[in-house]
Amino acid sequence: ERIVSSAPAAPPEVLFSAPTNDETDVPLNTKIRVQFSRDIDPESLKGHVRLGYSASQAAERGEPQAPSIDAKLNYNRGTRVLEIIFEEPLERFRTMRVVLGDGIVGTDGLPLKPYILTFTLGGS
Image 1 (cartoon, rainbow, N blue to C red):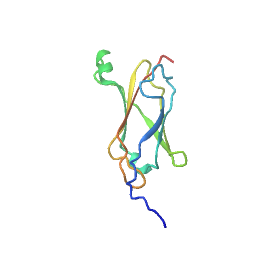
Image 2 (image 1 turned 180 degrees about the horizontal axis):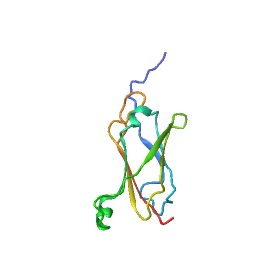
Image 3 (image 1 turned 60 degrees about the horizontal axis):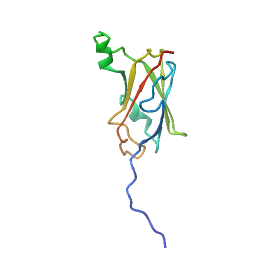
Image 4 (image 1 turned 60 degrees about the vertical axis):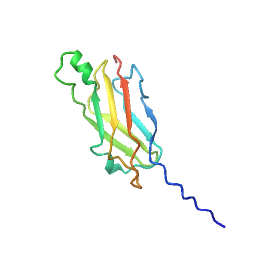
């Protein structure tokens, strides 16, 4: 007799990130790596990964807005890892925020649990 579980599948979530949340003195040449609990639909990442420096820090520095950040996204299905690679070195002593927002879904269509990663860059 076979027993079939009718438990609903768990939505994908972030298992691990490097740098970690609230990490400080992160190198300026860092790459961000985020590992998911389940397969993510790579198409759903487009336009739903937001990166930015702290707006309040920019205001404290007298900047009208925080500098923009250009990055490439690479998703590896085998390891379920999203890698964010920056086009230019990051700016010293800034707090960065990465938001994996609404619209990111697993290959089964279940939405990713919302995730925000915040870390502070060091001087080198």
